[in-house]
Length: 113
Image (tube, rainbow, N blue to C red):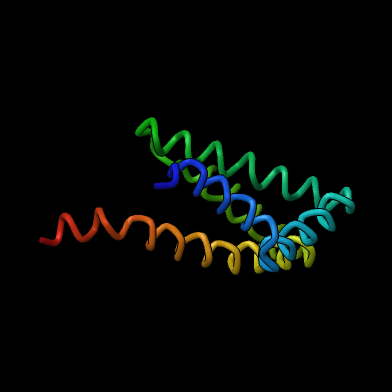
C-alpha cells in the first residue's frame, strides 16, 4: 500500500507540469514584469485580504470599503495583463476544484448514506 503523502507529493509534482498551471505561471510572470500592473495586483490582493479579515472578525464592510473595492475592480479591469492572468487562474482553479471533488468523494459518500 502506498503512503498517501507520497501520492499527494506526486500530484503536487504533476500539477507543476499541467499546461494550465504553466499558462498561469507565465501570465503571473508577465504581470510581475510590468511594474504598474504588478502594483495594481498587489493593491488588489491587499484589499482582498483586508476585507476578508474584516469579514472573519465579524466587522461590517463599510461604504468606504465598498467604494474602495469598486475602484480597485475598475483598475483591475483596465489592466489587460491582470485580466489574462485571472482567466488562466480560473482555468487552473477548475482543475483544482475537480481534484478536490474527487479526493473528497469518500467523505461525501459516507455522509450520503
